[in-house]
Every structure is written in structure tokens, then in C-alpha cells.
Length: 269
Image (cartoon, rainbow, N blue to C red; front, top):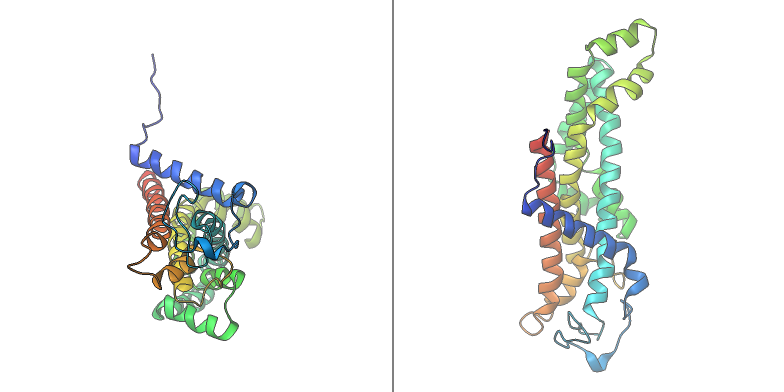
């Protein structure tokens, strides 16, 4: 009698999956089921503490904080997803060319990667946003365009280990070109560590967006994101604790859950 071959998931991993699923559902469905609009102001209810009517209280303009936090989930997670997608696409392209394009391409692209790694990413993003201006999509693309280096190095290392394997030599012997071998044999077999890294990069992108929005140069009001909700709450520090507590806990729990899933996948691989 054979038992199950699937390992039992830890409670921490199950909780992390449940939280991520909850946040994704909130991000997708929030605009359809919220009782209060995220931008709906009511000055008579300004800085109301959490209650049955406003579960997370209201801000200084009387806006329902729960609505803003859930709407902010769609913005913050959307920025993180787009940033990671951009980072993975750039990293896979650059790392693949470096790993299979020959010594000249390898030295050129990895040298460029080393130069990018010399700059503190946060300050590099600040400089680019200062030139291009803030905005939801700009922030996402800028974060992705400045965080591809680890993905490129991972895919390059995997391709180095795979390009002399029998199935690649056989494809080369049948006359397959470099591009065909890359897209059909090397890249698909080299993606496993890249996907694990993408999960961890997602949490970093959410933190980066929150930090930029908190400084006022990321997602701009009135569009809510977790970062700029925290920025609004800073003005009421010591008066309305809920304006900092709830968005801060959302960031903390989401990043913790993503990192928990990423660490579990990295140990499995």
C-alpha cells in the first residue's frame, strides 16, 4: 500500500498561500464590492476610529480606509507584478545572450550588469523618476528595468551548465540554429531558479513601490497605494493610529507571505 508522495505543507506556508489568495481576490474584486468608494470624501467623518461602519476607520478627508487599502492592493500588487514581468523578460533575454552568444557578448553584457550593480538601485530609480516623472506604469517599468541583473546571472549560469548537454549537442548536430536551441531547449530548462527568484523579486518590488509612494514620488494621489496611504497617515501620527497600522500591516503580511512561499520553493529546488 503506497502512501501519498506529496509532502505535508507547513502551517506557515498554508497561511501564506491563503493571505496571497485573499490579497489577489481583493485586488481583482475590490472595485466591484466595496461599500464605499476609495475617493469618496465625507469631512463630517474625518479621522473616525475603526467601527462597524468603517472597519479600518477613516482618513483626514473622511475617506473609508478599508476601501482605500483594498483598492491600494490592486495598485501595489499590480505595480509589483508588472515590475517583475519586465525584470524577468529583460533578465532572460540578456542572460540567454550572454550565456550562449559567445565570449564577446558574455563580457559585454555581464560587464554592463556589473556596472548596474554598482549603483544603489533605490537612488537610481529616484534619478530616473526625477527625469521621467511619477506615475503608476512608469514606476512599475522603472523598477523592472533596474532589477533584471540577478535574473540575467541566474539564466546565464543555467545555460552554461546546459549548453554542452546531450540534447543540445543532438539538436546542434541536426542543424538547429542558435535561436531555435535557445528558445526550445535551453531557456525552458533554465527557468526553474528564475521563477523562484521572480517570487522573491515580487516582494522586493512591492516594498520598492511602497517606499517610493511614501516619499511622494511613486503612485500619486488620489490613486491609492499602500505607500501613499502611509504617507497620508504620517501627518496624523499620534492622533489616528489606524492610518499607519492597517496599510503597514498589509505591506508586512504580504511581503512576509511572498517571501515564505519563495523560500519554500527555493528549498524544494
